Amino acid sequence: MLESAARTEHREPAITRQNATPKPIDADEPWMRGLHADTGYLLYRLGLRSGQLFNACLQESGLRLRHYAVLRYLATTDGAPQRELSTRLGYDPSAIVGLVDDLEKLGFAERRPSPDDRRSRIVVLTERGSGFLRDTDEAGLRVTGELLGPLDPAERETLHALLLRIAEDGLN
Amino acid sequence: MLESAARTEHREPAITRQNATPKPIDADEPWMRGLHADTGYLLYRLGLRSGQLFNACLQESGLRLRHYAVLRYLATTDGAPQRELSTRLGYDPSAIVGLVDDLEKLGFAERRPSPDDRRSRIVVLTERGSGFLRDTDEAGLRVTGELLGPLDPAERETLHALLLRIAEDGLN
DNA sequence: CAACAACTATTGACGTCAACAATTATTGCT
DNA sequence: AGCAATAATTGTTGACGTCAATAGTTGTTG
Image 1: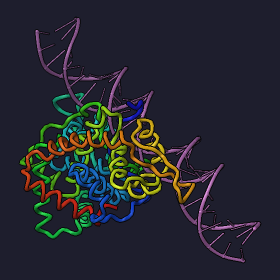
Image 2: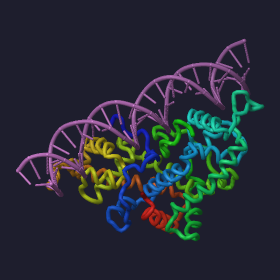
Image 3: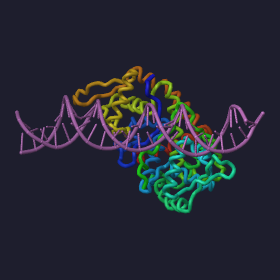
Image 4: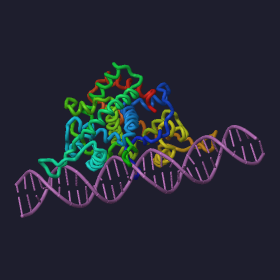
């Protein structure tokens, strides 16, 4: 057993520069079949790639995917205590603090005191926040389109359906 | 623009403990539809989950997903210089050093001098290494099975095919 | 063939960030 | 009133990506 091993797992390279870009991949090559024979590992790598693309188009706004996830969540519930963000999004409570701090600095969200519980703070989306969300929506679609390049619309639909089925019970 | 934002993107929570496990997800709930309306984001989250599961079952062996990727690659090519690992797997050359160090310590791989080029070192899989790979192969399949829970074999096949198509040109 | 540019593996420094433990303020229970 | 549980927050730790620098080696070119 290695002393320092097995801590973090799934960090993608920074966006500021293309990190040691691997050579283009041919699925025909034998090493490729071996590497991607397992669907789980394949998902892992594609998830990495997807996160990279997403962050790349979020980069100019100074936000990261985590911020975006918080915003998206807030948009669907219109107000949520930080604890809820933590449990639902799967981030540590301490991480939420920083994320909401950033969003507040940009004027995209606000902390409001909860009427029921004085220790809880309810995070709400501001007007600027939902505006930003609308603006970046098209960019997100563009990224998705780029990612799903070789698939025709019907295939994309089935893929989305399959992934959604997995997410239903598999996502924590 | 935030000063410290937009650096890393896609790190998954530690494996040693279930990190603030989100509540079970119903795709019927409105916030869920909003969050997972985009295939790219869905892929991102499932990739995260996949990495978590993978690392969880690699944890006891003291390795992480990165090590596993190197081993898998080595198994398919039977020997590769570190430079090749770096470009193909997308890790910085300096990262490869540490990974191969770990694998060597565990006796899973060896550095051999290249006959052609004395500055290059060829990393080869040892007997123990391929044995370990065989052992964890079933664990990997188990993980994948768990991840792909609600899908029947035919659906898994189509999912794998679709993901592979994306990976062909989309993976860096 | 000698000088030089390019390349491989490696090390070290720096900054960032996620995970965890501990702390503070507040709530609910009994 | 006392005490366990909870929400948000702070601080610490460890891992990681990036970059620069180095040593040894190769190939090229004048």
